[in-house]
Amino acid sequence: MIVHALKMWENNLLGSRFVLTSDHMGLRYLFDQVNMNSCKALWSAMIKEFDFKISNIKGKENRVENAHNR
Image 1 (tube, helix red, strand yellow):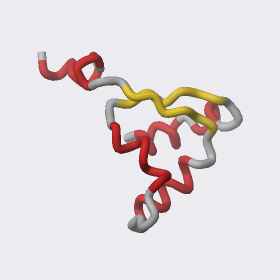
Image 2: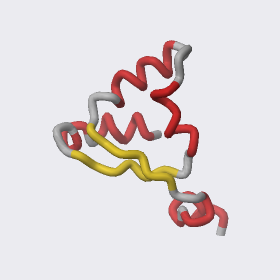
Image 3: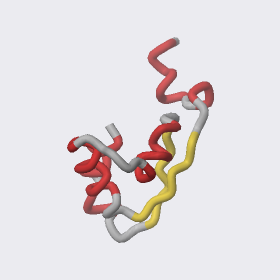
Image 4: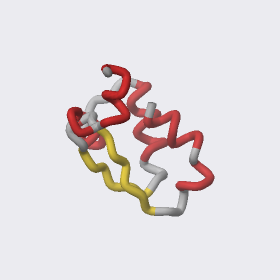
């Protein structure tokens, strides 16, 4: 989902610093992995083109993600 959003907004985001907010804690460790499968390696290479900081939001606080549960 994040890779798709970055591709969709690539023209607006490249060259700008932004905060990527997600409730997926594993995303923080994407760039620390040594052995990646080919999909993760491609995603990692594409994501590294952007200048961003990853901010975590707890799932309970993520109203958009939890909207379907109401």
